[in-house]
Image (tube, rainbow, N blue to C red):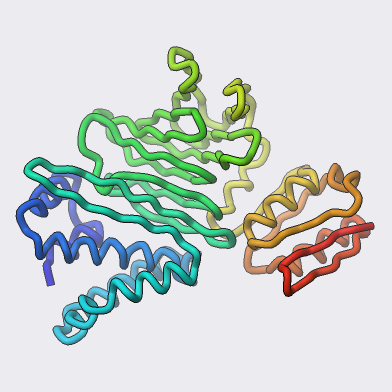
Length: 325
């Protein structure tokens, strides 16, 4: 059991210690292999049923650490962890690709983490930044931030609490836009198949650049929201309509005067289900509602029917819900 590896994943190292530790991996193959297996374990634990309570995930990780110290179990994990990880990831339809390549100089590789429909995940990056990932979201980030900036990319929706570092800005690339921050709290909604992206700032300050117009810079202040047309990259600035929306990271879905069309799109995303509407006119109806993810799709649809009279038919075999008047 390598105590340095354990301290790295339990967050007991500061920034300088983490960088020094990663440099040591270049000359210690055994430590590098242990590090890789622990990183895979960390990702799997993030998809536990206790994701609503980060403390439970930490406790699970610590229990795993204690068991690893038992020699027999340690050897068993070395033989089987790769197979177990593959089976779990396949069962959950999670794409998790992780490569480390160390040469004479440090080569920090990128990790791509994909969250399937119906799931959400929180993780802490090497600089201490916390990220919540919503369903069908892919985050690409380096194993460690080396150089004069911290850069990640996002496809989907993510909520960031960025660790402050005045000498190293944090940059998020999303659908043609770049969001530059030093230390702040903001939400990015940027699915590739959606017509618009939304950057919503809760605390701090962010600068938004368009890759098509790199000289154009827009600065957001708290409670500002930038709406970017993904095709043209045109941008409008307004105010966040409902702060409760960001409760999604806690499994609470809030809709303030939202059309049924937008609500049903989110329900398809959150519950991995197809919803068909017979009369398109009803998609313009507006609702102000709040749900918990654990309520389940059936209970949520019944609640929607109490606001307006709708008929719900569900095909369990094809995983399709049909809505009509």
